[in-house]
Image 1 (cartoon, rainbow, N blue to C red):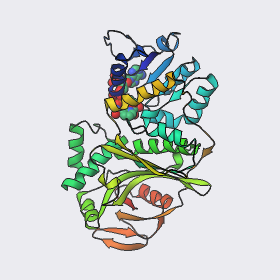
Image 2: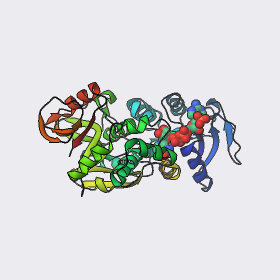
Image 3: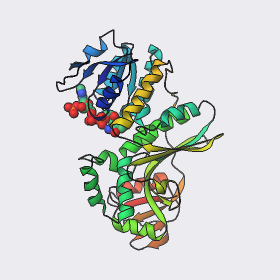
Image 4: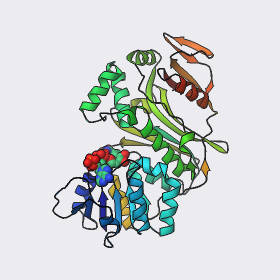
Length: 368
Ligand SMILES: NC(=O)c1ccc[n+]([C@@H]2O[C@H](COP(=O)([O-])OP(=O)(O)OC[C@H]3O[C@@H](n4cnc5c(N)ncnc54)[C@H](OP(=O)(O)O)[C@@H]3O)[C@@H](O)[C@H]2O)c1
């Protein structure tokens, strides 16, 4: 297998390093903005050098972002090349465009590393749905948020302090918005739902709330009630429809999610036959993520081609009602007062997310 690698950052460099020790695949060209010197691969600046090179059969996209990643990946598929990508934003946004195109062109399109980094989550989800109906997917899909929440819970620290620490350790970006506002998790649960349910979920119908407003006093409140806060995603069959959402969630101290430490992930599916299956591990990082990219490359080599099903476009139906912890100007029905915060009576996910949009300084968590 001759590979054209797009991007030479955290993931791209890892993919290059792992492939150099294999004799069944080789990175021939690397597209990157800076000049780099590699002993056995050519550094190029123009995507044409890769898509128009007939000796390259497979493109690995590890640049991130929507553009020009979309144009480059599309061009690669149109040129008859297999594509492996770790880019959740790309796959989630152009799911029902890139997958049919890959099928039409008879090439493989795989993206296991896009959700769960090094965890074999999407690949197992894909296998699982072949033999059973998947009822539910979701869990802790973002290591940065888990690191922050775990440190706040264990050491009683405030959000800003832990975020700074996470940035210093490289667990959080200088601009942490994609992680702490839940966008990364949002992409991941949409992509997981697409594969689990064989649909194409309309992104805009999936509400997301992150952890940016959590304070040490909230965590104290949770502890006093035997609860732990995690950023949890949910994609669930709901009659003929699907409830899909992302928000901070309070789980009981003994629950599996409560025990997930540091920057680890815990992702679960519930199947009609298998019941609950959880996957735990490193959801990010150079080598764990590159490992899963290379797993996809081996699958392509072995002819385990076309990645996932895609189906009709659906909008999430979030009429399901939950009870919520709210610290903010809540004027709706209250079940209990917890200091400055309240626990609401049952409110639908869609109504609560609409309220969150109007009250951007509040901190809200669902109670599981
Ligand atoms: N890091 C992880 O642990 C992880 C885990 C799972 C999935 N992912 C996904 O993997 C993808 C890559 O992430 P990463 O962490 O490796 O990002 P990164 O370290 O920022 O690397 C991206 C690389 O792509 C290069 N690049 C960007 N635009 C380019 C262009 N137009 N032409 C050529 N090169 C370009 C960047 O160059 P410059 O630096 O010069 O801009 C950079 O070297 C993202 O979609 C991310 O969501 C990452």
